[in-house]
Image (cartoon, one colour):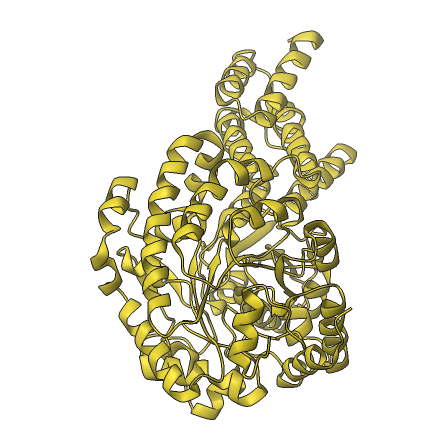
Length: 223
Length: 343
C-alpha cells in the first residue's frame, strides 16, 4: 500500500470513529485487510487515534456519554475486522486486568468502555460484569495473578464497597495496582480509598481509559 | 409569615416564602446507621416493611432534628410497579441500596397500557403510602414528610437497559420522546397518589439526565418536555432534583415548572443563584460523601454556612446520604443552617 492510500485509510478509520460512521469504518477496515498488510497501524493510528479525539471532545464537553458509546460501537466494528490480521508483537506493557462494577451497582457502561480500551491494547481482560460480590474481585485477582484490578461505581451510594475490595486485595497482594472509576470518584476519594489511580476528570472513567491507551501507544512506539 | 413548625418552614420555603433560618432538610434518602442501630434494624430489611420503613425514616428527625422524614430509601418503587424485581440485598452483610435485578423492558405501548389508575396498587406503592401514614402518626404535624419518584429518563434506565436508552437519546430522539412521555404519565400517576396520602412534598429525581451524561442539547430536546408534563399535574410543593453537574441546564430545569430545584455539589450554588436570580427556590448542595462521611464537623459546618451565604433556599444534600455519615457532621450541618444569617 502506498503512503497516500495508507493515510487515506487511517483518516477514514479515525474520522469514522469520531463521527460514529459504522459503514465507513467497516469499509476502510476491509480495504486495509485486502491489502494484506499488518493491521497494527490501522488499529492504533486509525481507530485508537479516533477514540483519542473522542476523548478530547468528551473532556471539552462537546461529546457526552451517548456519543462516546456510539464511537465505541464504531471502534468495535473496525476492531473485529482488523484484529484477526494483526501480527503479534512483544510489548513491555501488556498485562492482565480484572475488571467489574462493585456489588450494589448495576451500571456497567463506563466499565465496558474501559474494558474495550484494555482489549484494544492487548491486555488479557477478565470481566466480572456488574453487581459483583466484593470477594469475587479478590478471588479472581488471586486466580489470574492480575497486574491491575479495575473497580467501577456509578453513584455515591454504591462506591462504598470499593475500599473493602482494595483492602482485601492489598492485604494479599500489595503489588497489584487498583484503578477505580465512576461518576462519584475523585482523586480525593481514590486517595481515601487507598486506590492507585482514577480518572482525573472524575465525571467517569472513560477519559482516563483513553489516556491509558494513549500512554500505552507511546510506550509501544518507544519500545 | 410565621412558621411555627419545621413542617411549615420546609413547605413554606418550597413554595417560595423566605424562611429564616434556612431549613436544613433532604427530599431524598437520609437514614443513618445510628438511626438503624437504635432500632436494631438491618438496612436490607426496612424496604419491604411499612412499619420498619416508617420507624427508620423518622430517626434522622428524632436524632438530629434533621427537618424531614422521607420514604422510601431506594429507587425501585416505580420500576417494580412496572413489573421489575428489586434486589434488597438481604443475603449480604454489606450495606447496600436496593437495585433492580430483573428489568421488565416494557415497550412504549406497554407503558401506556400500564399507566392507568390500577398502577397505584402495584409493587410497593401501597406499602410506601402506609409507611408515610405511620410516619405521620409518629411525628404529627411537626415535620414535613417527603417522598420521591424518578424522572422519566432515569426510570427508563431502571426498567430497560441503559445503553440503548443513551444511544437512542441521540439517534432516535422522536421515538425516545414518545417513550419518555409514556413514562411521564406513569410518574404522574404515582406522584399524585403519594401526594394524596400523607406525603407533604415530592422530589422528581432525574439524575440520569445530568450534564455529566447527556448534552444540554439532548436535555432540551427530549428530557424537558416529559419533565414539564409531570410538573403540570403534580401537586405542590415539588422539587426537581438532578445531581452531577447541571450548570449549563439550570435555566432549563427552572423552566420545567417545579416549585424548587435541587442541585449537587458539582454545581456551584453561588453561580446558580447569580444565574437564576433571587426568586427561584434552590436547594443544595452539600456533598453527602466528602462532607458528611469523611469530612470533619468544623468543615461540614463551614460548608453548610457557605451554602446559606451563597444563596441556598434550603440546605440539602446533593444525593442520598450514605448511612454511615458521621452524626457529628450532620449535626454540624444543621447547626450551621440555623446559625448563619441570610445575606
